[in-house]
Length: 266
Image (tube, rainbow, N blue to C red; front, side, top):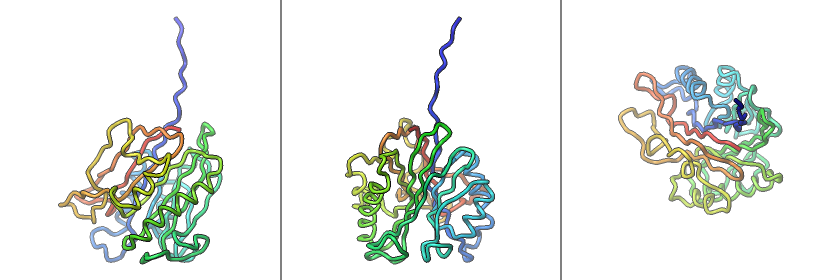
C-alpha cells in the first residue's frame, strides 16, 4: 500500500473591520465593553490579518495587547498617534512584516492633509507580509471620506496608482476597508473597471455569506442593506470564502459595522 503526500497551500483569513472610535457618548456600546467582543470575534474566526478603521491609538494598542498581535499604522491627524488609524493588526506567529507605510488620500499624500471635498483627513496604511511558506503579499487598508464624493473617486485613483508604484514586484494584493460607497458608486467601479482588480465577494468559490449590508449603526432591529465595506484582490489570489460576519452578544453588535472576512490562497 502506498500513499501520495499532497501539500496544501496555506489558507489565510483576512478581514476588514470598522471598530468604531471610542466615543464616550455611545451609551450601551462603550469601547471598554466592546473590546473583548471584538477580540473574541477575531480569535474565533482565526483571522490572522485584520485591517481596522476608526480606531484611536488607545484602541489599537488595547486590541493588539488583547490578541497578542502586532500592528502597523499611524494617526491620520499628525502621522504619529493623533486621530483615527487605518491600522493593520497581524498574528506574529503566522506572518512576518517586511515593509509598511501610510499615505494620505489627498493631492499631497506624503503628509497629513485633507483631500478634495473631503470633510476629514483620510489615510491608507499598508503592509508587505511573508507567510510561513515564504509567500509574500501586500495588504492595503483604507477609510474613505463619508461626505465628499469627489474625494472618494479621487481616492480610488490615487490608491490604485500608489499600489502600482509600491508593488513593483507585482505580488498578490488585497485592498480592503470602509469605502463608504456601494457597488454602483464611481469610487467602487473605478477599482473594478481597472484591469486585474476584482471584488472578492463576487469571485468567492463558496457563495458569499451574510446579509446584504455592512453598516448597522448598532441598531439591533434593522438589518443593513448596503455593502460599504469591501475587499478587493489583484494578482494571484484565489478567494475561497467571503463572509459578512454578524456575530453578536446579548442583542448587541461588537461595532456599528459588520466585519468582512475572506479566506484566500496565494
